[in-house]
Length: 459
Image (cartoon, rainbow, N blue to C red; front, side, top):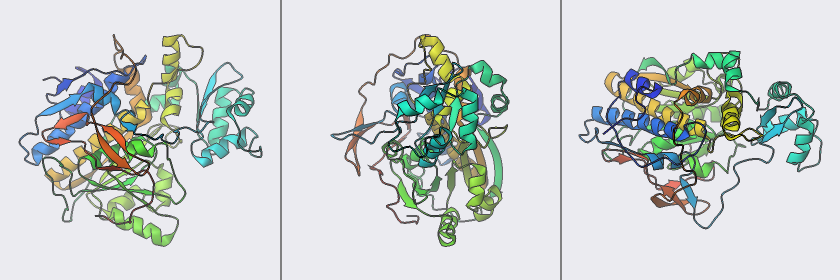
């Protein structure tokens, strides 16, 4: 029995939340990178497993101390856990989401997956009225006439999302980088006491059975958190606005969930959303603060609607500093924080080299799930709610400061055991759970691949 990362930031984190313990670790990582991505995967899942063990011990399950982590499966669940059977999933990237060379000899990473971000990019580049489809070559030609930081600012000011290429030292010396370094990896604060009956009916196999999780997240990190909670038995209801979609991502992050669309700008539908929150045990959200306020869900409003709520939130660029409200995604944080610079330097490539997976998203999501479980454990003891905050940029700081692997992963994607699971697009083989705590493991009977097909009500 052992626990990975002796002396690491993760050890300190687990001691802080009183979940340090022995873990049986098996298997070997395979994600190959200049940075210890495989180690990050194992540490994130180990933290999740130990948080679950602590909760199950409080619930009185005798096998809670039997904690198992599989390194190969940890790597797999960083975005490689789904194998379609006889069909091809939609592409996860818009063609204009890419790295482009700039006039000053640097680079910029654009993000055009969301229609409004794509529109902002084309507007800044003077291509808003160009006939569709606009291709990467046309975008690249326009970007070549800009300096990286100037273009970054112009796109962000227009309501888009982008990141100029920076070294780790440049990021660490910048105001947003310095702010993020001072934040905790997982920030905790206590909240009001619980004052209502619970629907929680835990079992050794599904310790979160009966709990209600309201999911106001998109893309990867937030949905990863709620997918974990669904895999442990919670009723997870994801809420999206009428026009939002992310078909290339859904097969990876919607296992075990239900989905509803609500227009929170409509008073009646906003009331439905507030009613769902008033009966939720856990809220997970990834919206910027201003966006939550516009939904009538400021921090004060959330605590008023549901005293005792376990409130988990994540952002791209942290919670303090000049970039706290900036739109961002894993690919952009890798460029801004220096991760892509480390990859380029280590490989000798002439262009930025990002991580082999969206590791910041996945790691932050699994750590957010650990935070939610820690919040539930505290509520079980004290009837108190709690708030938990994480960010991709803070996870990036952890990755950049972890000891480098002496022998990085072998690369490739090994065959791992899995289960046939149905989706609306076709069957997939879903990799086995990377963690086991007693009889509990991540288990799913279905994967939702179309948003908005369920009723706006708890089971």
